[in-house]
Image 1 (spheres, rainbow, N blue to C red):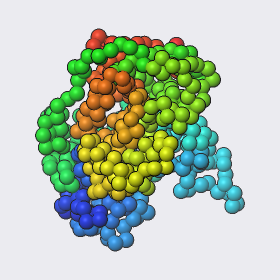
Image 2: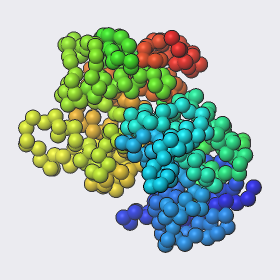
Image 3: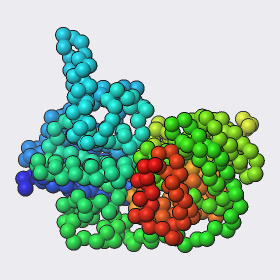
Length: 496
């Protein structure tokens, strides 16, 4: 296989903090080279240097043997070299349609007027390459997270890449879409396209990878062939120590009802849902993309209005009309898209942590000293890695961003947490820390969690009970001790 890329002795620092130290990475034509490491290991920084978003401080980049000039290298130059990136965070324009996002850099124009028929026809062709049905006229803001991810993939593949960078491409999509993506990756390999693949789903490595490079603390640890390597060996190299896997070992202290839901309905979305969350319980909720999981979470939190339904919280009937109302009742919500809906990216760690606590205050008396103390306690308790409490959240790793969202709700003294895909894009070490935070939260028996995840194994490991959704309805209630991953998936695929 010919060498497409060589990154040699790469160094990068931000505000005096070294994030890449003498990193080396290479890629051959027709190869899937997997880049692994914990959150904050330097993976995203390395690919942003390659894609022209960041300028390296020291080192060399050779593309097809040609050394690039780092002083003039930028995203446009990267694109000219055939480098295309699918970022973990979406780069779509929400108020434009699917077709407009696909044609954004190259609209079909005839006599100075956009040829809309050609724009929509091209969109259909691009979407056909990923075998994913989507209306080209739909606004991106109306798409689910999974649909946005598939659209990002379609746009990237339409750019005729030589080097394709995939940053967590399966984080938000279902098993069926993952299978489609892996089939596409196999076809791209046959065409001689080199793929840099970043994922925290270690089980994917053996399915599609050829080689693995592991980073830790901004430095190379090892580059290995996928064949013959064991997953526990990979985890040890990533973290520098053995990871103790979370499994269900606790028993609920009470079966007292805490939050009861009756006849929850949103026309054409949720259909007459009835369920109860008990005190001290982690209630798991799973289903395929489009099953209604996120819509239910948004309805409970007061984001989307119900057309019918009743709720009883701790034996009192309640009507949640807005997120502010939900917060006042002690309900917290970690949304599926933490960057868009869960954080203020251009604010510091301190401000994000205290945001909900301040919103709940009925008095204007709140000292800056107390806010700093609140943030500092959260940073230490949750082991948030940040240069300071004033560091902008947008510069944190995925795992640390999620910890900030957790800290925000914990500091507000919530009694009921809705966690929508809380471990998306988070490495194995940070994921275990999130699980421990969840268990700590429900140890106080007056508290409970609705845990939503598309990862069935995760649901089996952490839940006390499991509800399975399909087409806006509950199709099964299962005991995780007495069921299997295959059985849960069979219920997920229920069509009536």
